[in-house]
Image 1 (cartoon, one colour):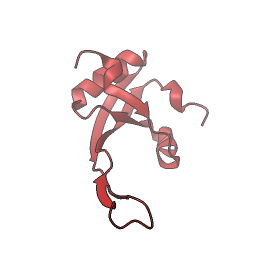
Image 2 (cartoon, rainbow, N blue to C red):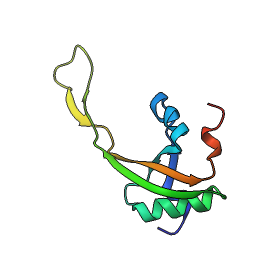
Image 3 (tube, rainbow, N blue to C red):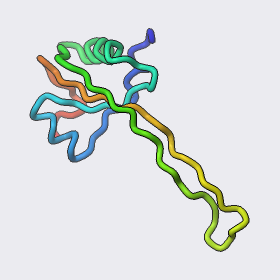
Length: 102
């Protein structure tokens, strides 16, 4: 991947991920095709002044969802939500502004 802004989709700001910022761990949704090296370079380029110590990735599988109306048995079917990739980035130096002040 060449464009670093396409690798990082959004920061994940849940209660658990914000609590991990004290340990210098930041959580992002990333492109499914991104490797750990791509994620490391993207973080260091997009957020200047940061040095990445480690990158852990998790592929979050999509869940089954039932589709259709309540009274209609004929149109009911099952679908799936989207499978996505999550990266937990541990920084050696620097901070990420999206997580500050939370």
